[in-house]
Image 1 (cartoon, rainbow, N blue to C red):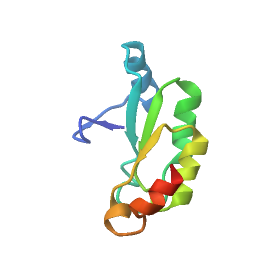
Image 2: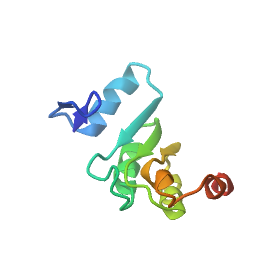
Image 3: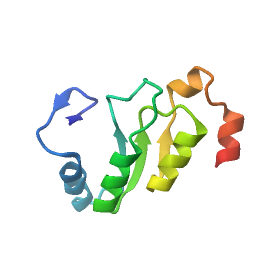
Length: 102
């Protein structure tokens, strides 16, 4: 797991890491699967679902999103939101499509 803008590595697993911050009062978190970020190969919906089953937190997913189906998969996993970067910049998703999805 990487933290601090991906500059620091940690031996701690993601669920323990988020749980520690939840205990300190954090209610929202952004989680990026850095192996998928910018790859447009789909998000890690199973990972986000695992996190949300273990911790009651508002999770914003990031990394790999390339289609409206990916966004629906994240919604079904329980994610509060999603960061859509490269798919938007490369025209794979438009603001009009995203507006209909919300």
